[in-house]
Length: 356
Image 1: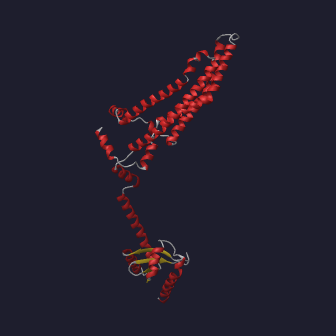
Image 2: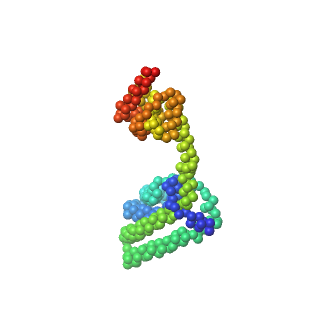
Image 3: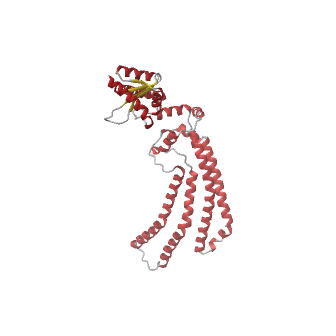
């Protein structure tokens, strides 16, 4: 238990989106039983309000028919089976909407809290759930004490509400035995309706408060230590050192491919020390020169070295070299506003080639 306390003390950071998403996929989400209880009671209130009148009417019709025809019915196995079948059918038809309403509102309660979740993992057996030591730990934890106090307080308040409503109708309750059955049924109907309505108002307040508490408690349990956050970042995004090394390797490969294009260039424009841009111009393939290599500082010097080794003309033009390096990406054609300046350089190279 002390280890658990120390472990919890180190978890000072809010849970990451990745951890919360993974927990949701595993079915580990905040869940308020009070929200479910409220929707169950709300469903019961709807059932009493909407379904009970017709249910009671059907039952009274069945009982009335049985009493009216009691002298005409020959009691044997066949008639008993028929009566049982008809009664069961009426019960089923009356109760089917009731069960449908309860199922619907149970689903609504879960959906409002966490949306649609289906996780087979949450149904898998876990040894921690059947561990005697951890079981005792859960029994005497702060969470268990809070849940116990909540249950006691709720039971007292629910009992008080039920007693209050019963006391309000005490005069009618005392004379129920002297009233007609139809009057008794009508009173019970309205009494249940008011009782359920009062309890629903009480439980909606409890449900809102409990949902907020469960959400807070869940986020507290999901908190992470700084080490966990770093480890998760490595798992999801990769080790920063490895990623940096991979990026460096990709850059070196791209640079090597770029340098292989320098011998095929028609001209290298420099400023002359800091920037170098190699252009290729093939009138048969495309009418506009394309940047096949570029670089600054030591890469610019390397481009010039390769150009000299392969007899590629080098032209010094400070403004044009700097502009090409900044404005044009590798393997892109030059923009319209640089056509004239580059055309002058190409024309100059053509003249040199003709003289040779």
